[in-house]
Length: 361
Image (cartoon, rainbow, N blue to C red; front, side, top):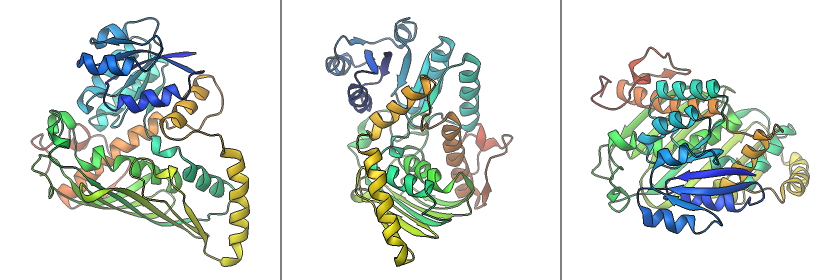
């Protein structure tokens, strides 16, 4: 049994649901939030869980194995460093860090402490994702060709009424960092890491400091080309992926927060191959029928990894690459350049991408 403290009772409520779905593996012993009522309400959903207001008290608790960071983005790095210094494993909501150099620092600190640093990318865990992974593993997908991504959500005044949102200092970035980061990570699962990016960004929907619209083009390690359309001015919340391989096309549903949970469509480019694809899907479905998705799916893989077993992990390197991509998108949008990844760490954008920090505007 691994013991957990959840820091932050906002998105932390969804993390709690994930841990409670794995009661034989995890025990949530504390919920920490400066809003004591929220902390108490969330703690009450787990047996033996206490509400705490002081982060340091939780980190110093010898009965806690894992610190689960669900705090505002500007706190992720400083709190993770404290946890590593105390010898704790860390699970961290996106974004992993507020800059590329901070992400590098966190990775080094985790390695030095021999602690797990697991970035949250729960989109990777879901029925449709497991199906496509199975088809790709069986050689039925072929070579990645192109992908189109849509993150079309609706965020208005109510969303930005939370004090830390809408500001560079505390949210650290807009739709690219806080919303599309999930779907960008997900496409790399099948197309490989991004190697080049160009981008257009704008603030067109809300009176905030941060971007809320984006049009992004990416090259990936596999040679696949990706286009990503992002807006916070949608009529509703939808996310969609269409991944075209040389042998099949995979298309998600429109679930905004769990695209893998929807029914996906898999169409063979050659109609004669559809039978093999459909037969493989039947076999894959029989293998994944009891496999959880979302946060529970990711937490299960984390437990397997900590136990020394084979696990489908989102690694700290995946998390660092996600931050690197954000920095590259900001640099590309501000300069008009095509940015190559990995980024040269000597670039100023790696230390601070916020406007007014010496970056091109």
